[in-house]
Length: 494
Image (cartoon, rainbow, N blue to C red):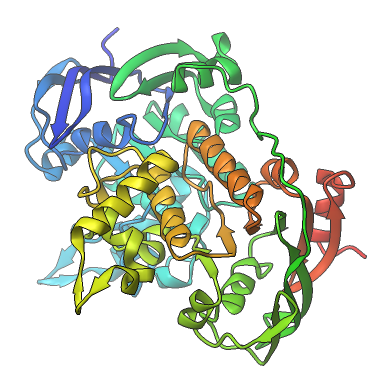
């Protein structure tokens, strides 16, 4: 039977990096084919080539047995290929229906036929069995609803192949279940779906086959029935990960930070907690519980109604990120690309950014010393890159996260807040980040870890604070914590 898609011997290189080396990948009609691999393995590069956003150096692409050549994204779309990126390509001010037909609106007498536009949009949603208010501007829809609109957009151009890049990254469990139901409906119509995810448990719920890449090479393609989590990890990283949550030898010391009477515009309510030196303190809760708002309030990024912060039993005043940095507090933001890094700057420039005066002599930055600093941290925390000159935008997600960590280490931070530190990174990079956090607390640094993933909160943290609707509803030690107890507090039970 003719395959829906075949990619043969696809190669692609960038300066100093062989991104893909004679990669092969195929897709059947009515199949969900998962594509997994560590950050930098080549998954996104292959998808960009399929979408016509990048040109391959070599290889062939066949759609329904016909050799094709994509010079532009329009060429790819014309052959029924739709790529749904992790960052959606939607216009916030336009309604859901307007986004579905953006650029291909039906016209009548030179004007958009709005009645037909909304009727056709409703028909598409009815076809896939979902409901969204088509008159609502995109900016007011949830992430899950925006994802539905992206899928509906792909169906307007009669897509045969839909590639989804990390579709579950920001979804709740309920929303993820709905996404899987929608994928099953699309699959039943004969569409082929490429599903890229770092969450291996999802793969076993949705995929028919799995292809694993490592370092730009095709490692294996197997039926889901022939795989287990350990086997996929071994293919991905080239070794067995003995400890998913590595143990550490840190000794919890004296109180390093205390936050008291923190209130913020009704979002944060009477927050009180402390952090010890050499401790990983976990903060968890459901989406909207106020975890990120708490981190930003401590860091001085958002205004508050009241707040007392004590650093080593001394009252300090933090009203801006600059003051937080001065007192040795660093924040790894949830959105590392937009808030943690300057993507158009090099590794060395990002690492030294918050402590640049340390490198200034006679009013000039000592660039040689700056590069030496960057190389030191690249070696210490194993940032993979051809050199310190590499732009941050060209790094994998895991390596971008490490650059942000290096920035705070160079700033001599005593306290580092990690907000969703492993979101969007693969299992191998996760373990490296866990090891990095362990090495920090072994040096006496205090770490606050905010995460939605309960296994890593339970596996990594000495104590766990559970938030619900802006308040801390419970505190558990590592020994006390179970998923049931955490969810009990996270859902507001008393």
